[in-house]
Image 1 (spheres, helix red, strand yellow):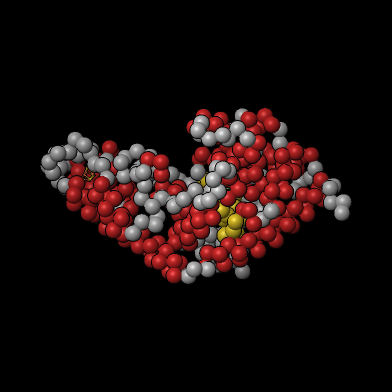
Image 2 (tube, rainbow, N blue to C red):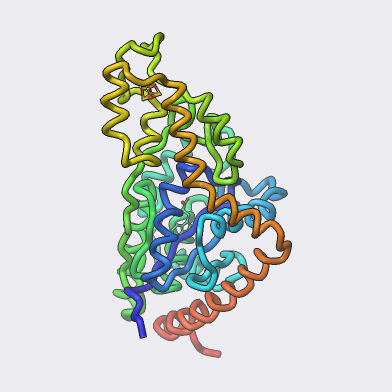
Length: 331
Ligand code: TRP
Ligand code: SF4
């Protein structure tokens, strides 16, 4: 039998449609990893509450849409476990126990905590739950005794805290948790169509759910080298959004395009047409899978149910280990 290389866990908060930045930042890698590792991928709906507890009306739809994005991108529920954080109450129990052992100073000095407090000034997130965000994340990871966590660089402080929380637990009680390692996703950087960072708040994204026609329209809107007025003006591909996309979707032709652009031998309209073709070709299977998923109204629910069952077994087993190690398994 083929032996898996270890256990992987990762999650995303259900905050709306994924865009190509999210796809190349994480999901593309998850799809590869599911073949070689025992994978647990979950929707972090409790984490979504930490910064958005007042309005919960969108969460249910966002959970559904997120899993549709995952399946469309190629996550295969026969190869990996896809589940919902709040369905596995054991995460909350472990979070509570970790909240006993985690020094307040570790949470207060976490860089993501300070950043978010500054950035989300309009929301009241000076809460106990938000401070404990990394503690909940540590529970998500450690309850599956995951060895590897594929994340973006922004999550490294949380992973470091997770290791510290594990180490402290093992030291005070007994060796229950392995210390997980990050699998850093090589950053393929895609800007938004306006050249800034791709982000929903800038309204410059290409969604994974965009139709081929949407993609074509958005490529037409992409900003190019502003110094190029006429077709034979020499261009600067390094400042051109279209060129950044060619680097990701059209690796075979980048060198040639760079040369032709610099020599004023290709026009932007043609260059964009070429890109739109490459992108729609790449995204077509994702779009097709989405159409299939959308035909089956109960599919996503069934996938999550099945994933929950598998995840719960592991989580319950770990909680038995934890209670025993802490000698609180009195009843
Ligand atoms: N904090 C992560 C993010 O915002 C989401 C997350 C929650 C997560 N728990 C996790 C990621 C556990 C990896 C492992 O992207
Ligand atoms: Fe950008 Fe292509 Fe135009 Fe050069 S030719 S500026 S790479 S769109």
